[in-house]
Figure 1 (tube, rainbow, N blue to C red):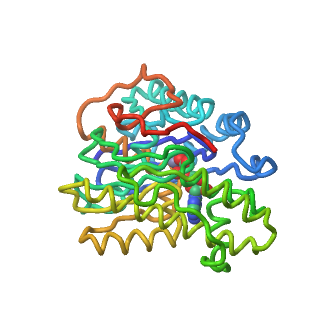
Figure 2: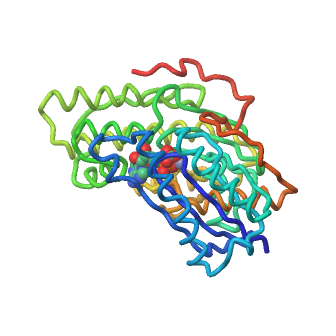
Length: 344
Ligand code: KG4
Ligand code: ZN
């Protein structure tokens, strides 16, 4: 059974993992960079790239040691080639290419978004194509009709901020700390979600696109009003995000004939309140619901190794000349969303 080494370095986690095509995760190692970025309240690309340089090789060594295998035992090496912060992508991509070259193994360039999109199939053996995927992370918020490996139709995207970005900015505005998503989720547990009236951008709109910039501005106004506790703003914000995700995803379900499951992935899918709301939606719509465990939703090496395993199983690959790409859409044919690129 094919054994794949996966390397991830597109944002602020350096990660390496060994995964087989029969879904055994032999090892996965991850080095976060929270301490480096915390003073800045967000990811600083140059610091991220430098940390990847330090951590990439030791993490690969640790993952191999944990799994009890040598580089010579792997069948292929996969690394993220984009999209992401270009400095970090280049570090992981070159590490993967160099290891593949030295060990005489095929190299697989993985699209980070495809890593997220296929990771639910690593977690759930019974998840078959096609499925509807809500991919919500720090850089993306998309609804994708996943027909097969490498075959994605983008039904919707955000016209401004990504959902995770909205969580991160809200955390910063409310002084809840970094990284923002888990901090807002934690604060929301102690708050009253009905305390602050916040907008639900694009609710009811025909196309299933997302928008979160206006919500973030409303959080800023609520904070400056000085009338509300931060935990109440956090809870109200999270509920507004959930209402938007549910409404938009419901629209996409109506356009996803043949889909057997509603699937979520990406860092925001680690949020328990969001998981339960989407699970309830799937049940109402008669769809199976699949959400990978939280550690597999946020960036990790296993999802890159798994996407590599799926690509490797589909036929011969040789991505040795693939460039690092800051942008790399899963569905290059998708039209630009109306209003896209307008940031508030
Ligand atoms: O997929 P990911 O690890 O990296 C990207 O590819 O962007 O996603 C990171 C994003 C961040 O914006 C983070 O705040 C958000 O996912 N996130 C969460 C939670 N955990 C991570 N958002 C809401 N609730 C969470 N528990
Ligand atoms: Zn990601």
